[in-house]
Length: 236
Image (cartoon, one colour):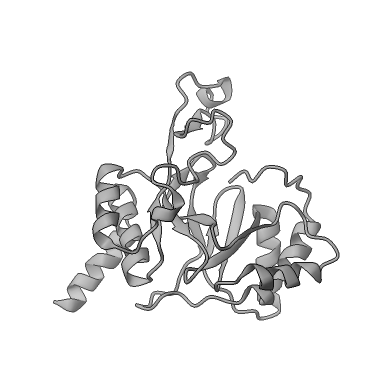
């Protein structure tokens, strides 16, 4: 019976739709002990731009559900509840997604939870190719159509400061999700499009293995520096 239940849980975690969001949120919170909460989500923009009516872009016609009409990360951030409400409690997770079944899954990074480093998608692909070439072991990688995020083991500001101080220049398009930060997890849907695993977690009961930020930051800085990107907007 235990094997059958485990198989059903994995199928729920992989299926698309609302059940997959709840299943993934519960898996992160209870199996991996990653604190999560629902993201603000997206809503139709009402009158769609011409590009959306002609099917010229997946993101056209989508707006954030938060009150900010110029939100730069539509759907991809907490709002109500706030980030401090993130939890690993299964009852709370079930209640949240029962009331908001389409809500994105937001991971509260830092502390005992994973941290992450994100960069534009083109730079992310280059960085992963370079790290693979040198045989660097990577953990899970989260991808949206515009940005890729590499999950790493928890780090503090002092450690991150030393790493960045050793760099000649750190592109503004490179973002660090540490204590007090957050990251949207698959299979969420946000303003930029679908959130997916570029490198999925290993299919094992334990929480995914994560590399140290020090082992990957050089490659990420180099890939970001060689990729044109203004970096002034996070643009998930």
